[in-house]
Length: 157
Image 1 (cartoon, rainbow, N blue to C red):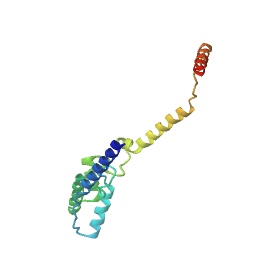
Image 2 (tube, rainbow, N blue to C red):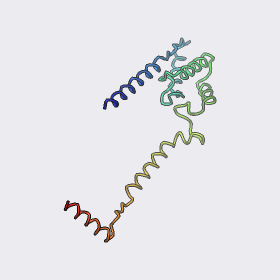
Image 3 (spheres, one colour):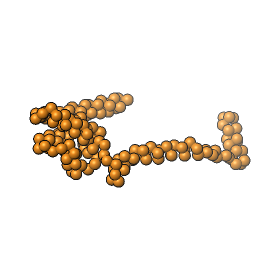
Image 4 (cartoon, helix red, strand yellow):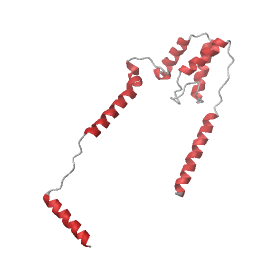
């Protein structure tokens, strides 16, 4: 029990240390030329996925790569690139996975339908397990007599 408590305390300490390490990543503030440029920037970084975190947008992530990608978006906006040009640049460099809503095409079918396929396979397995009749092994007459004698001997002792 004592070992379990020590292990839990160590895991909690490590998790908090890693969380504090990640939170220490400084997000660079930007000075925008206009409010519309800032709105475009905020919209774009919400649309793009952090490739390190994979479950966060660039706006939500504190990873160094996310900061580099935000810097790139900011730089391209200052060079008067359109939103589509910025998206195209990111996709060309990092693939469709960088988009939170990747386009439906042959190379992204797994992204779109993979979870649904896994759910279908799991459902099929569960149905097969439920519908498969469970056969009980029956003992032969000889085995039943032997089991009865063992029970009789056990009851006598």
